[in-house]
Image (cartoon, rainbow, N blue to C red; front, side, top):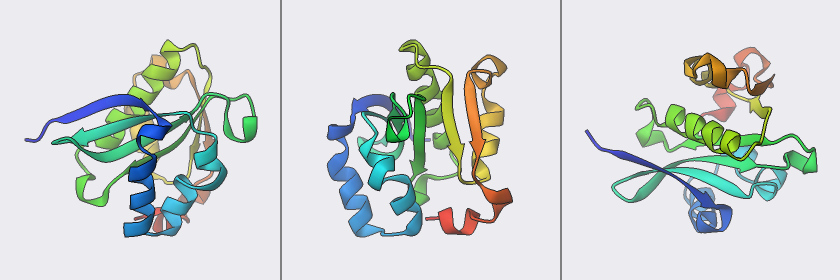
Length: 148
């Protein structure tokens, strides 16, 4: 089984990868998760690497979207070919741990995809209690739009 390496990096270190992702796999989901204000407010990212290649990302906005003051995990994205291996959960937990270590709480997490609820449910209770989860999934209606 391949090993997944998780690390926190400055946004600038992955900007080229994100741009390439938009170019190679343009979609509404990527435009929603990793563009516009949802990308502009990000300062750090948690990346998942397999064999040295980035396969997933969680984006962190310490000051929140639109400078709301609410520390936010803005997006979690795992490339299609690496889904179903627990990488999304690893990214979520690492982002939460990093933000808590910096005193950034409560952590806002906007849920745009119903699959995210399963990831949140797996977090230990003491970490879930530090989250301010905002359900924007419309009961799963936008899941098809958010599939990449």
